[in-house]
Image (cartoon, rainbow, N blue to C red):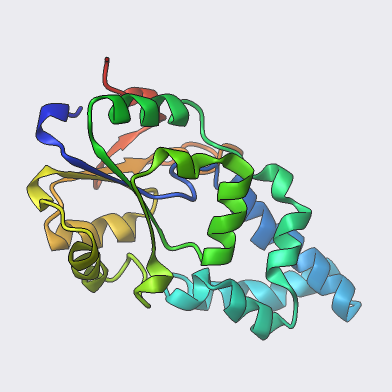
Length: 218
């Protein structure tokens, strides 16, 4: 699927790509509604009816990924709530082997995430993945999510890379589209962002089931 001799820089998403999206899905679909229902003394079904439209309206924006925004909007400590279920944070299978292999062949490895800094810190503390990256880029530092093509221009100013020799692996198709528009040559989607959900169909981009599909032989 990949000719590693033609790739210099590897840009990797975090949630749903390197980490199992089950944590995030469970948190927003179950844990936050449960705590919201307890706070307002309403049934959890009513809490979901209130929260889900608000979540959907923010998808793809910086607010959707912002812990501080939701803490203010919901009057709840989202960071604290995340620690209550942080045992669900998990690295996808074969990720570590992949990172070690591409490091061994000299690739520049960059984590590029929309996650808020507080979420990023929690997940790095839990997984220790930060030791495997040459750089960690948080979209909040740029004030725009990866879904916006301008994000990639800002990234290149901060971290120069050759678009023709760069690989991006991401589970969000709108992010892959914006990267394609910017000219990043190698793009891969993820078929199983959430280990507890069925494998999805992706036709628009080449896609991997897990990182064994693209781990180079050393």
